Image 1 (cartoon, rainbow, N blue to C red):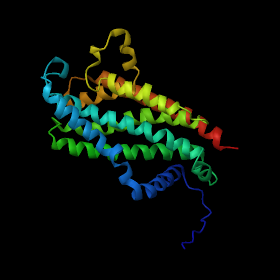
Image 2 (cartoon, rainbow, N blue to C red):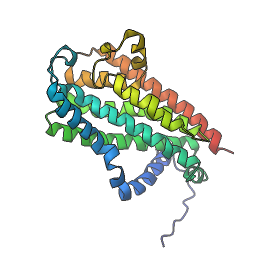
Image 3 (cartoon, rainbow, N blue to C red):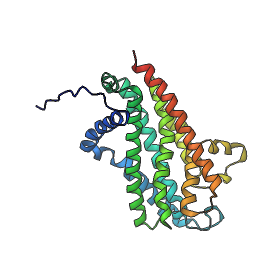
Image 4 (cartoon, rainbow, N blue to C red):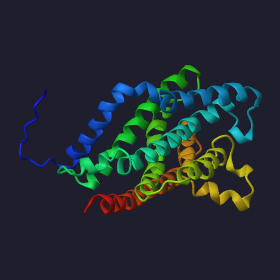
Amino acid sequence: MTTVESTGRVVGHLRAMWLRVEGHWVWYRRYWSSSLYSSGLQPVLFLAAMGLGFGSQVEPGAATGGLSYLHYVAPAMLLSGAVMFAVGESSYPVLSGFKWQKQYIAVTATPITPGQLLGGQLLWVCMRLLLAGASYLVIASLFGAWLNAGALLVVPIGVLTGLACAAPVTALAASTFDEGERFAAVFRFVVMPMTLFAGTFFPITQIPLALRWLAWISPLWHGNELARGVTLGGLGPLPALGHAAFLGGVVLAGILVARHWFYRRLVV
């Protein structure tokens, strides 16, 4: 049996968050295969189905910027996969930390604060998004899905877009005591419509103007615009800055609300 001796020192903020990441990593390295489909294979299968399969029937035109449908849809597939993964990792697992497994209560019984616990949780989600995005980037390159080195920027854009969804959903999970159909409703009425109508498979100009604002307020549309801008071109600096600022604002708002609920539920 390993004996752990107390050093008598309180760790710093970054070290405290990293300890939470290490806790996730201990679990992940044993059970990584159970999440292989959701975090890695799912976006690739979507790319094969939509980019290669369905895309073979789509002629290059104005809607795709004169490019093949594979090139048009490849960056968006990474982002839609990131969104689905981020929402999944921030819903039931976070609620479980409070309600069922109660590991959040155990962690905050140590000198680690609820804010540091939240930071470690979101940092872990970012690392998983980075790993999944890099894997997708490599596999999609085997399909010839990328036109230039700008594809490397799609991975951090995917992380930012995923975090823009993970932070608010983490706040929702932290404020949930009886989950009921809440998370199922989020997937059914928010995530799926956002995936279908936020510019993933076709430009939102095809959507009636009265409904187009729903795409404008979705993090995925802003991520799609950024990702296509760096891979296909046609996006100016100011619009790119606007999209990035929107995503950053959603992340910040989500973190602030989540932090409030983490402290409210974990500080006696």
